[in-house]
Image (cartoon, rainbow, N blue to C red; front, side):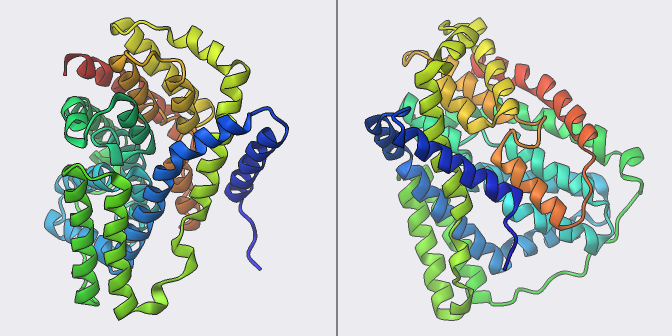
Length: 391
């Protein structure tokens, strides 16, 4: 019998607390139903996209890409750095930050072993860009889906507003990744040994899942609702595995842990908002849609994310930002995406990343993680908000 992890206890505890809020009347049933109806499309998207990327990883797509990156780098750390940051950024932007944390982290750690590269630089590249590269599209982050719905932006319109802040966030992240982890004095080696290229196992599964991921991206950019686009792509991947490798279709593909966590959050946070949290958030964020209000919203979102988690931080902040304050809402979004870099629980992606590092026996010095995360958040967030205001 498997032991229940601490993360699972937190997830079930949060859901139980949310159910108790409804049963005791702390959260009225009508308000609970409205909250759950709002997140229903998000949950469908979450299930579909995780199944899609799990099967894509099972087909070896991520392993082959990471392997080819190391081969293309030809032993140069500078080249490998650019390739890995591009890979992590694109995975986050188009396939969701939790995908980067759940699937890319073990791939990068395995790659470190095969090439003799220190694991921490690769791991930190994954976790930082899982957060800071999640601004570009609605699918990049669950908070983005909530914000896109609120400001009524299509994926193209969302990207048009966020491309400059996104580039700024990635640029600052890359600068500090190099300074803290990738430069010669930090990584401890001049060159690495390129790996022997991996061979593709089942070419049918590899091709089918690769095409499914591309279809998902095309449908999203064409304006199809993300939950439907993800479901269509997941069905293609499922059909391919049903024909070629049915034993790979196991119940664990369904991300029940994430479903429990998100459902619990969206029952607890509305209850807190009804009982005083909205007053606190209004005082902290204000109602100014100018530059001052944008910076206040971003700072509040970042601070609250590192105290509790970015999903409830965004939800609580959104509840008090006036509907017409589009810039202030997007600044809050920037704070809850770029700011959760300091504490291990600041975002779900970071929690999942720590779990993978523990499983691979990678020791992450917590003090160093928090200090470097503070530096990145302090430098990146003001630059991102400034870019948002001029975009």
